[in-house]
Length: 279
Length: 332
Image 1 (cartoon, helix red, strand yellow):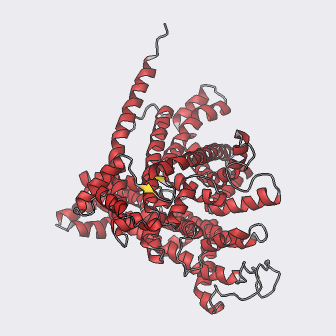
Image 2 (cartoon, rainbow over the protein chains, first blue to last red):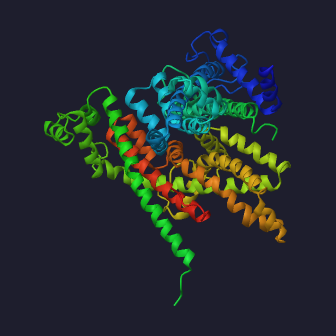
Image 3 (cartoon, chains in turn brown, purple):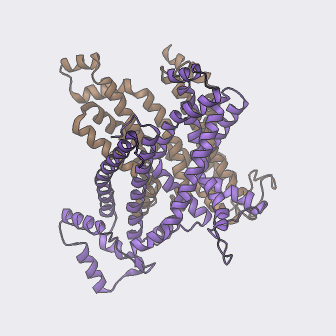
């Protein structure tokens, strides 16, 4: 019943519903990519620089080398969504741990954690990501971790605020009186109550991570074995005079995906945060 | 003789106090940046010395020996860290063989162009975002409100570098209104107007993303402030709606916008680096990519440190603006 209420509240935000449906389509494309386009999307299959609609077998045209843009977009959806989700997971893991510890224990631990968060907000985030990837190598894992490392601060601040508000409530005091360990109180008692707003923020971090990844691969520092959307935009850049569609199409894909992820975040916010509900 | 009002001088004092506290706080922040740099160097495959000399394959034994000494590579790690911090505290970021000049000089040559792009983009974002937010809140639940919402949604989702490329296609290649790239026309005198013409597209590409954020924040802040008691009191006093909106509501609604502007300084700097690569803008972005692709680590690490410094200074400026807007708050 409760779950049904959540879905109903989410669906009442029509933008969020449309966003969720669109993301489902993208995710489906990512899932069926190897079936629908079984050959390597980076293989040359036709004449170069065919405009969308020019040849029926390539609905979105071909790029400068004669590779099928539709196949590359569909395969790119995999990389883009996976990197976005995993990077957000890394950021959430770091942010929730740091925020929970800071908010629960307070004092100098809190002070130190918040200084560290400030430090990570000071370092220009993308420059930091590029430096990590450059020094440690352009692999998917490194890119995911690097994006996670620069994206956790807002989640940590929010988690900390929630923990500060909850840590002295009666149910927590009762747990302490019963002699529960700090770890059990943090993970088992406070965290479930603190989570709803954090989930909303994590969903927005996915959108941010997709943008980050696209910038990293646009600049040529992406994983060379992966045809992510950002890389396709970068590849098409040399040809904007004759064939600007090569850059335009993957950019639209990024924009639509990020837009839908943001809409889903708004919807989750409406559905999960009772304070703002019915506003 | 004119006597300064008491309020003015106490505010100046408060501003000075804030400035001093911020400068003190900046020290551990910069130290943190240096330590992160150092950890990255330690994590890198190969020794620090190899990293420092990788570019141009420096094999001259005296140079290698000099670097060995400067960075104390035979010392224990903690001593190496201290020496590294000591060197950087003296602005000794090493020597860039590629530019054939000290790293600090190479960066300082490129910094002004980046600062110009950052400043123009933030200004654009602030003016457009605040104006759009005010319009949306005054005309709430009308076509204008929806238009602002939709535009904000799109610019918040579009990758800035892609937006830049698309604007080049439209405004430079198809319409021919504005230059494709660079900061000045080659051999074209290079007056202020020329630079401004080159500045328009990169500013839009970088600034519209932030304008979208500020428009959304401004709209909700305006709507929230408009419900507060003092606004009703001002209206009851007989002030016109326009006057109340512009002088009472606007000023207070600006506070959250200024706050996030401060938080985002680092992102703006990083974003400008990407935009610079799209428009061949001669800022630290071009230096960064050149250094990344040639594995010129000292320059990259130097950019991290100086970039963080720029962010810290920009944050102090934002704090002072905040204080001017809201005299009640003494920022800690």
